[in-house]
Image (cartoon, rainbow, N blue to C red; front, side):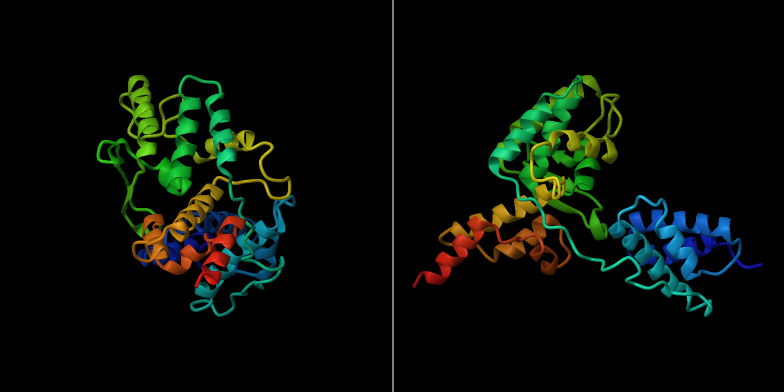
Length: 299
């Protein structure tokens, strides 16, 4: 008897993860596809029709989301065709072009202050302090939201002035030095959470003392970001990381004698495997372009 699609997916994920790939989102999508395929065509092969139907269900999905879901199945199909030649590989462009990134929202200093002020007005005993501290940390360090939410109490070394980010993207661990202005808010929040939930292991906790969930943060942020950006391009949590990178580069450009290559230093600080990943975060903001023009015009 042929293996089920879920068994095939598990084999694929195990081999890819053994090579160092985490495949968190892709793994979730592929298991969803496998359960769908096993339901509509038990013990059948991978067909384009089955992949397309799954990728666009439910029907209210955005084309970009359907394209990303289909791309995950496409890579799985390219693996499966080596052992099952009758596997059909879905078209890459069935839902239009993929890989087109939305322009980020670069926060102004006033917008960040406004965001933190709104967070402090949230209801709850610890919730306003949690959200304000979390957003402030993202703005001050450029951490990924997943990295911040996975921080344990032992990882936030306030007295030493750094954060330990463990097993992040590509299973890398790094030290993130903190600016002196970030230490008092972290210290105040640490005292509050320790008083309310002394046994909690994660640094950022919910109102119940459990680990703060990514979905909860995103839903709360959706209310806090009102009036920021436009309806077509609303700001995202990840845009705080873009904003941090742009500001670091701008400060390096205005510095008369920069120490070393600022992009290489920034790449290591952000936890990028290669400097090529860092260049995506460096956008042509008006202030940065003005510095570039001055550099070219200077003798």
